[in-house]
Image 1 (spheres, one colour):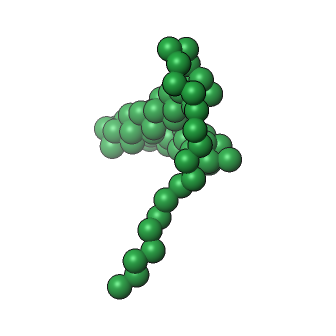
Image 2 (cartoon, rainbow, N blue to C red):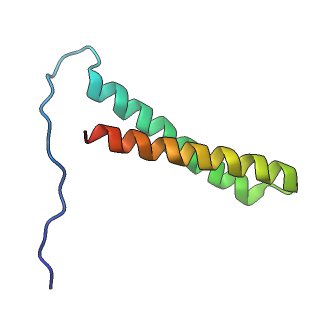
Length: 75
């Protein structure tokens, strides 16, 4: 059995009432993740082929943006 632990490096940020960079990027990631989920639902419910294709393009763009934001968080 492989006992390698998967973890990400922790970056300390100040705890203040104002939003910091971590708060902003976390908020952006949450919005993109929600959009990906919503587009996935829209794809399953689209009865028109053109509408489906439009939703698919938006889903793909939102999915790529979500992954880019996720990767940016760990730089």
